Length: 110
Image 1: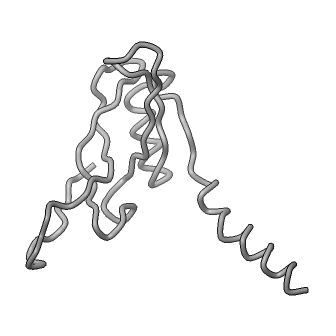
Image 2: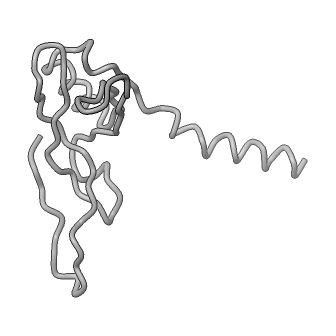
């Protein structure tokens, strides 16, 4: 019985990680990509690298700071989409070094 409870707890704790949607950014318009982030709070986009041929890049993009860890903030990022080379979105970035705890996480509107 203990073994069953442990297995069930492991499966249930891993399930939120599986819930994030994944999209190919270049098959979407910029408006559709931004709407996906706004509607789902966080998504993963994949797209080809501009510098290395054949390399696929991917990252997690978020609606605001609430989807980032406490030591991160939602910073402006750009992804290539079907209709725009630089579609503006937000991605979690580490906060600058704050030895005295005086900095607040900046709030960048989507």
